Image (cartoon, rainbow over all chains, first blue to last red; front, side, top):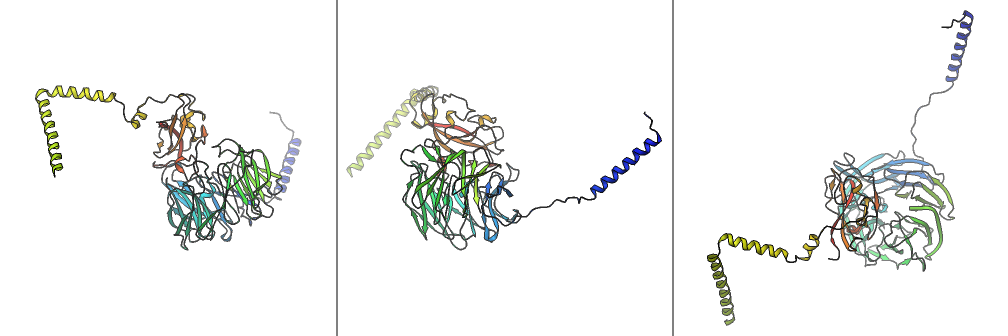
Length: 372
Length: 178
């Protein structure tokens, strides 16, 4: 070992003490950080939900920033928001051992502030468990929530989300899709080519049931089980692209004459994807994902978004996408945004009136979107 | 009245003839001989054409062509899900430990070998986590969920102890042109 002189040893010791003093002086100026938890601010304009197979990602379309996550079961069909009570409602299905064990289907209530579960209502274990937006519908009275069942016959579970109680299971053989109309009624599409109207009473029990005349042929040209609300009813579309606007007047079902999205010479274009049709209710604008393909290609993603003025039934724009998209939604704001999911994941945001691309959001692939 | 008597006498005559014939056979034939002749009769009967329904199931197994682990395989024309043939099963068998659903959706697929259309049953195998291999989504003849017998979007794990989806097999039920 090399030996140090007494002087050298003293000078090095002094240097070490000086360094330690300096370090403690620096660390004394910083307050140790503490972890905290955000609470949700008031929802802003153009906020939307991106529903994936493990939850609902909440985004601000204006900034592209994520605001929070609702954790949902993998088998949740959809989630919907009700602003007057500041709550979200989701239908969920769980199994005790993830893929086996006792099954529990339920409607969960989440609050706006923390996106946390605040209540649960157990429903029959008959839920269809498909990620389809119209398998869940909150009646316009904000009280009765309908969940589509398949066991394998079709039925609908009605839940009073205000009193947090299951009401009963309505048998709806051959009919699916939940399209709320009036205050406490909903329309369904049926395999015999008709619409079915179920009217609930104040308690949520079935009061009346009406069937429309036959207006389509499920074998020749089926109406999709994907629909979008309009200003006074709902918009349906067939696999070949025929649009039907439907509405109700008390117990009457009104079905307007069909009109075609596809013009002469465009017969190889078809609507398709997942949740591929959306409308801005106040502006009367309809947006549909379209692709080129043969019959039975109705699940192919869209290559373009075709935009129509519902009042004139004229196409006003063809938005060519860089890739393809499975789902589309327009927000209901004054300056609406068009939200699209890419076939390779992520979200693209367009101005829904000027059709300019505004941003791409990197996020897990969504099955569909929800405005709130 | 006369007609009733005539019918009664005819029945009597038939009964009497049948009884006499049976007795004559019983006297002339031993039991072993009777059994041997019955055997010949049954063997002969088997060579006669069966009813059409039975014949469609009794024909030789379907001739196969292609790769059962490819979504382009002819049986998968209306398939949606993941292929059990990639997951430890085959196009007719569920992987070990999974539970076959008895309730299915159906489709009609053309076999390129013989050019015939076959009625297909797509059964989900259930009770395990999804086997995320060989995803396959074909939509030939697919209908919306409200017409569920022809809808491949539906999760068909009904009637099984556990209702989680694992993968899907495709069984030939018969020739569609029979």
